[in-house]
Length: 89
Image 1 (cartoon, rainbow, N blue to C red):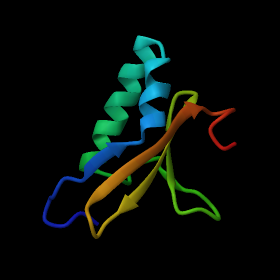
Image 2 (tube, helix red, strand yellow):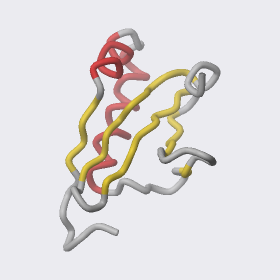
Image 3 (cartoon, rainbow, N blue to C red):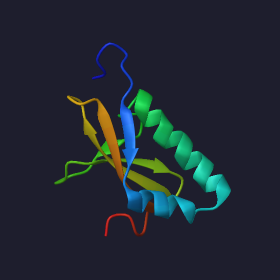
């Protein structure tokens, strides 16, 4: 779905940045790596389109990254990064 190998621009909501600041370093590094990977492939193995919603989800251990993909604008917007028990509330 990428056009000509073009990278997607990844943006984070301000609330996501605040959530990331609260995470332990080891978890933060894994999540940062996954988020950076979305710029190359916004639909990596294991990602899932959420039912009844327009966003996607990727798992990183017990944490979930929720994001929207706009193929026309070649952007990914990360809207939530939280523990799996809290992310869908």
